[in-house]
Amino acid sequence: MDELTAAGITDPELRASYAECKRLNSLHGKTYYLAALLLPKEKRPHVHALYGFARYADEIVDDLASTLTISEKADFLKRWGDGVLSDISSGTSSDHIGRALVDTVHRFNIPISYFEAFLHSMTMDLSVTHYQTYDDLMEYVYGSAAVIGLEMVPILGYRDSSAFAAAEKLGIAFQLANFIRDVGEDLDRGRIYLPLDELAAAGVTPELLAERRLTPEIKSALAFQIARVRRLQAEASAGIALLEPASQPCIQAASELYCGIVDEVEKINFEVFTKRATTSTWRRLKVAGPAFAQAIRAR
Image 1 (tube, rainbow, N blue to C red):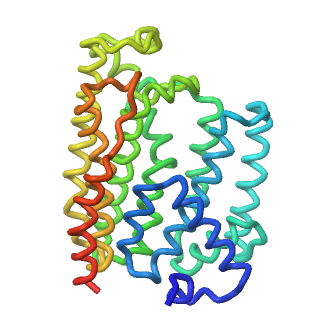
Image 2 (tube, rainbow, N blue to C red):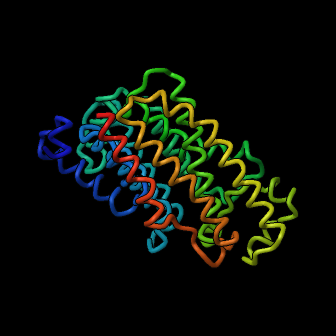
C-alpha cells in the first residue's frame, strides 16, 4: 500500500498536492526526507506537507536567481501566505501546496498561529540582516524553526504534553546548527544569523566576518555557538521518549543527523567560508540503519 492510501488520502487533486510536497522534500530536504522514511507510511505524507509549505515560502525569499525586487518578493509572499492562512481558516484550498497543508492542519488540529509565526519570520528575512542579541534572534528562530517542531508533534503522536517543549528546543538546535554551517552562504545573502553581541564577546565584528578569513576569534565564536546546539539537543533528548514509539526512531535519527552538522564543522576545522560541512553518506547510513531496525520493531 502506498503512503497516500495508507493515510486515507484518496482525492486525486489532494494526492497531487501531497505528491508535490513530497517531491520538494526529496529534492531539497535530504536529511529531513530520510528521517521521514522511518515513520509509519500513514504519517509520512503529513510531514511532507509541512516541508512543502516551508520550502515554498523559503524559496520565495531566498531564490537568488529571481528577478523580483525585495518589495516584489514581500508582496508575493504576503499574497501567497495570506491566501494559505485564509484557506486554513476556511478548511479548503485550491493552492497546489496549500491543499495538502490545509488537509494536514485540519486532520491533526494544528494551531494556525504556528504558520502565522513562520510567515512572519520569512518576512523578516526580506528586511532584517542581523540580530544584536540571542533574544532578538529567537524572534526569528521561533517562527523559522521552533514552530516546525511544534507542528510535528501532533502528527508524530505523544503521550505527554512535555513533548512540545522538547520539540521546540530541538527545532531551535537544528536551525542554529544550520546557521553555523551556512555562515559564508548567509553572508552572500547579506545576512548574519550569529548574535552580534556574542560575536563581539569573542572579538569578532561584522567587518571581520565579511573578510571571510578564519581567525582564532571566529573559531572561538563558532565553538561557543556549537556548545549551545549540543546543550539544546541534550535538553530535548528526553522528550523523544514522550512520542509514540513508532515515531521515536525518526526524531532520534533527525536529531543525530541535523545536530551532527556541528561535528562536521569541527572536522573541517571551522572552515565555514571555504568549505561546506556536510553529513557523509556513511554517517547517514550508520544512523539510519539501526533507526530503521528500531522503527520496524516499534511497529
